[in-house]
Image (cartoon, rainbow, N blue to C red):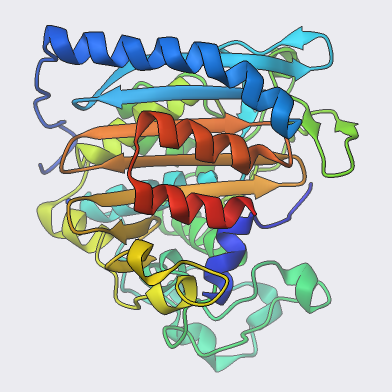
Length: 375
């Protein structure tokens, strides 16, 4: 299994209904529908050229208007000679993490675990069994990337260690997400995949998203084109990761964004806490050779499972992903109830993502943020 962080994730490593009912959604008007279809027509015309220009095999896009899936589309090839379709399954890489966070948050809302209880009472990784700092570690810390762990244990000689005291420093960590998922399994007595299905996939109507699975899925899964131009067959594994390698379609992930936008399964308090940033990372993104002052966000940092990016006129709740030959992005704007999902299967995919977002959501400051990642 490839475990490379995306450019988006690495930058931050350095660097708003109760219960399960969804909020009532507004009805789209004829002009809004027409505008949405006009944008799709423009994307139809331009996406193939972007793929050729940046040497990216394919892109799949889903567009949310007024809290509803307006349309989805795919362009290019999922594998050599095999066209991508809206049903193509992409490795969404680190966009796995918001799914995991929402599962844990909904379990907390249901009273089946607490975000602030020590996880050590139910789960301790054998590698840190002798370290008393394990007693401080909570689910909330892990979901905010404040576990103190490295991104992956292979970075510390395949042995999990604390690189900082839990809760004291923000440092992007896939290990923290795997840890909190193991805790949720032992706290509830259910396996992880059944928890994700119960709390997120089924309520959101997601039928094409899976942590594991082979067989027929392989016939729909996108292969990946790496930085050296070579192709790699899809890794549709049998062991789940809570930080990477979920397979999904753009439309299915859009259903997830809509569910999150509607605060499905959350208490009001947890919905607010989810998008509260307690360690502003704006200084890590702005400055020489990064973002110029005029395009810097007002605030930027990790909530619980999401990156929260605040501008004067809108808040973008987002997460990206990237592995050897995949680049992905999904976000929603609570003020306007809009959102976009973009999946690609090429190492240069961030350039395509930037151009898709510039067309569909032309917030110049956010596009500059994406351009920084595409360099």
